[in-house]
Amino acid sequence: MPKIENLNEKSGMEKRPFERRFEPRGPRGDHHKHFKGNAALLIAIGLALGGFFIGHYYYKAKMGANTVVVKGLAEKIVEADLAIWEMKYVVTGNDVIKAQKDISNQTQVIQSFLKENGFSESEITVGRLETNDLNANPYRNSYENNVRFILTQTVTVKSHNVDLVAESLNKSGDLVAKGIIFNSDYGSPVSYLFTKLNEIKPKMLEEATENARNAAAEFAKSSKSKVGKIKYANQGMFSILPSEETASSSESQQIKKKVRVVSTIEYWLK
Image 1 (cartoon, rainbow, N blue to C red):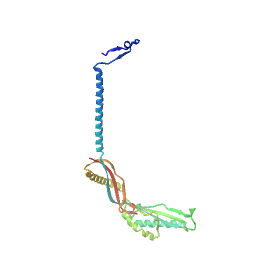
Image 2: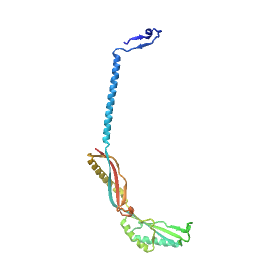
Image 3: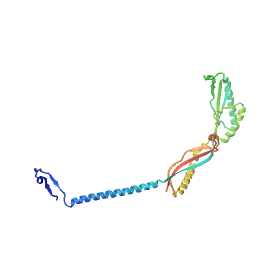
Image 4: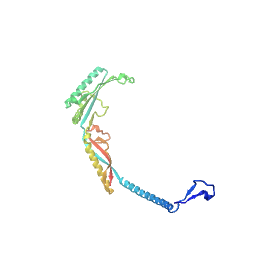
């Protein structure tokens, strides 16, 4: 046991009960110092191993992050399957009743023309009559034009027989010869539409993906690696373009069209 020393007796001071000091002796103190040394050594080894494993897995993560981003293009020529032909014609005059009769007669002439060319009544729609009284315009100069009324009517043909619409459009000069004046302020009267995009999407996306993988394979070959699985993919937007692109070409004015999609895909390299 450790020796218990009375401090009061040693210093000659007044005795104080219970004031004692314990002094460890023998091999127990040496064991305490030895334990501290072992603990410090274990901590150092732990830090060293922890640093090794952190560095090792960081290296593997960086190596595993090798990817390549490529784009795959797919194009397909299609034909419009729906045509919308809007015929807007105008009659002017100072007698609104007479002008209305004239435009009504022209509507009948146009309907007869369309039926003679093979269109059914279900494909022909007559729009509402629009009347413009120029005298109702407070800013109009009464001397600039003697015509007071402008009547406008529209007949619309909506048909899946695209070729028939194109042929009939070329014959519309016969209507002009009968005194019908068409309003051409709105550009081309016919719009050719392709409505079956969803039917060709899967095949085009498959082709775009294949082309993207081929591009990735070429890159991997040059870098002496192999193409792995897809990390990220964006199918891209489908675009419908004119088959013959010029500065003034419009997709809706051409029967043949070009459908295009560009997919962006990121592949793992291994």
